[in-house]
Amino acid sequence: MNKAERANLSDRTRARGIRVAGVSIILLGVGAALLPAETGISSDVLGALLVAAGLIEVIAGSLRRDVRPYEMTAGAVTAAAGMLFLINPETRFFPTVWPIAGWLLIRSLILAYASTHTSGSVRMWTALSAGTDFLLAVLLIAGLSIAAVVVSLFGPTPPLIATFSWILAASFVATGLLLLEVASCEREQLNA
Image 1 (cartoon, rainbow, N blue to C red):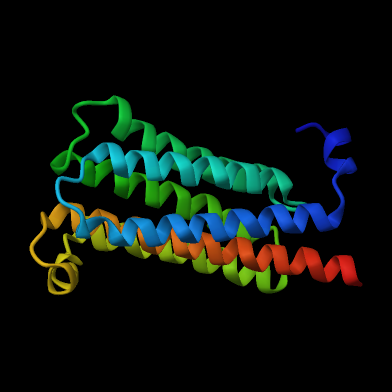
Image 2: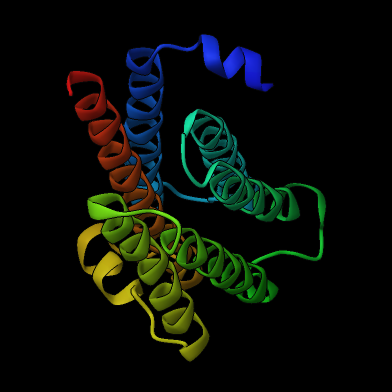
């Protein structure tokens, strides 16, 4: 979207688009959290979730006033991580720890840097989203498993699938909440 097209978007349209993106990513997070309830989940499903969330985040980033390139880059990194699952046959469950951890670390660095270029509650939510992704990467690298919670809720599932599903869900929810806060701030600027 070039500058002329962005200028034609009303503040209301911009806020509405970001809000829809936030809700969509939260719904993807809910879907990711429910994945362990299914049997035979393939890495293709996880990849598709990442690609969808990444594309939604790129679109939402293009609607942002501030930190547009950083938010779009964070979305592109998410989509690229998803593409690894979809096209690389070597990226199956055991080797998947590193692409997921790498995605979370890179994304957290991009968002942490973006938070230095924002202010107020958007800064706080951007930093919170960056911190969430960083902590999830550390948990994943350290090998702490969320699978025990998943198994107690959904019954026996492959632990790696359960862990990745919950990691994706937590990251998606943090991103969705960030976008909802950005939409709220856009709406406040409209009413000011």
